[in-house]
Image (cartoon, rainbow, N blue to C red):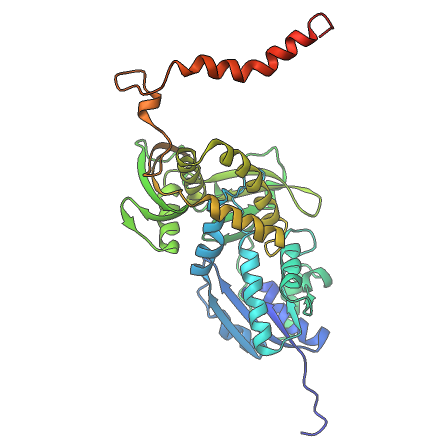
Length: 405
């Protein structure tokens, strides 16, 4: 009809929970926008109800469910394995590396529909708001960003009342004392009693792992095969990335492997206490480092550690799409050219320990190492080597003699 205005569109990262369900109606009322709801599956538990149908019922003009598990595993998890990515040498970045993929997919949907905005459900105190916002402007600086939970001032009870008054169908379950985020690479848990860093996490915090005290009394061994730094097989069976991660999550979890209790420095400037379960991540990172130690030269291993730390920090800080990150990934990929081989890991009472490794590219030479028959080391070369190696110190000692310490 002549004179009818067309509303702008916003793409909402939609989980189907209370916050994002309320956000559909709130975005319509507050900003006069048409909402496109997008649910992205990176391996989190799926609800029993149809969240897409519910999004449309609430008022979304379009709603999509995107299965991104394979992309997440191949293009985000596996590169992070090659980089031995562990924020502050502790956290395998399970939540952090999922956010840039989600943003990429949201931006793609926005372009397809000509949307001018992207909305997400992040709060003002967490890291995820930075990861979403910075990734969005990195991929499309023209898109506007709306974060309803940074704007509205509603308690959980007020959100429920808002839903009731506006006939928003929601599924309100018994509120957990914890805030939980999950995907295939790990499970994070915070809030509740965990906010006291002096209290041991109670057993009900954990879902993916058995207590090491209750784990089997006999160790379980697993062999992981890598090609160019990427895991490709478990116990001789070739597996696709998602299948491989899920298999190792089950295997390590039943042996109590993967529990992490971490005082973490958030990007927003505060310390927080985070409890993670990352069974497959802990296992695979240990195995990968074990193989690298066998096939990479000393100087490359040492230099790569700095790149690994920076890779982890950039991932955590929401800078996945930065030029520096692109350059580091290129370096990491090149470093993995010869990281082929098999690693045997012992799983026992909460520990994943590398107990064997083999590779056609191994730099370990038994003939150079052994003191038994077959020794091929040129012993006579040692004296000359030591003379040259110690010569700078010998020269300095002579020059400085008698001139103080």
